[in-house]
Image (cartoon, rainbow, N blue to C red; front, side, top):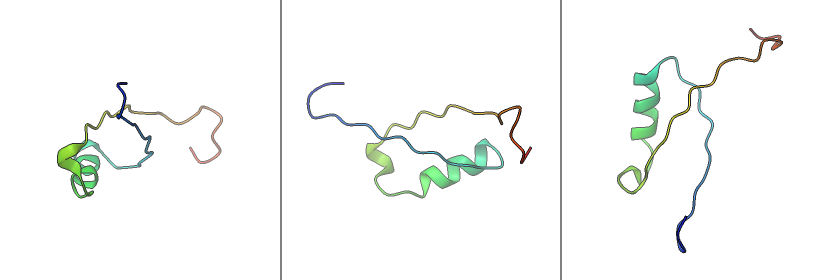
Length: 49
């Protein structure tokens, strides 16, 4: 990162990539953001699986 730059992390859940894109597009300041999506999978021992 360069001086004056900053980053944040967000955790979102969506049924599919299209729904996630709709959520991200609806947020303020989208034109100034760069979103990077990293798909996650459930942990094998997650009781909610």
